[in-house]
Length: 141
Figure 1 (tube, rainbow, N blue to C red):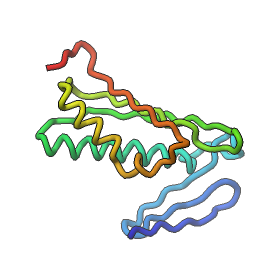
Figure 2 (cartoon, rainbow, N blue to C red):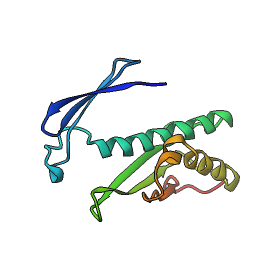
Figure 3 (cartoon, one colour):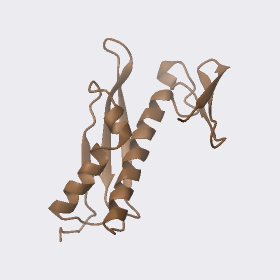
Figure 4 (cartoon, helix red, strand yellow):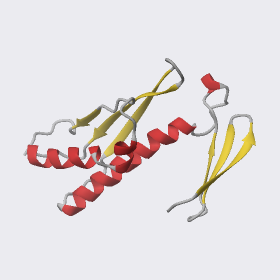
């Protein structure tokens, strides 16, 4: 079990401390919610958790099949909604692959990102569309 402790710093700011590693993360509310936007917001951390989890699971699938995934890039865009309460409405994931993959390989990569623990932990009330992008001027093998 991992423990993360939090210290409220006043206003919309907190300090998160990862007890196992000693790493810390400062958080701040976004400007549109009373903060200064100077750090990750709590909902930004959800998006960051999803993106890093998907990247790790892509990497694990690639290692298992001896595929080089270096240079593959993920982008997660977070959309908030306020009906009926402020929450994350969508986490839009774009995955920019470093090379082309055939249909069988794409099924493996798709399974990797859709079964990462963060994706599986996100409520069905949050839409998570995922789009894979091939490198420009590439063809499937």
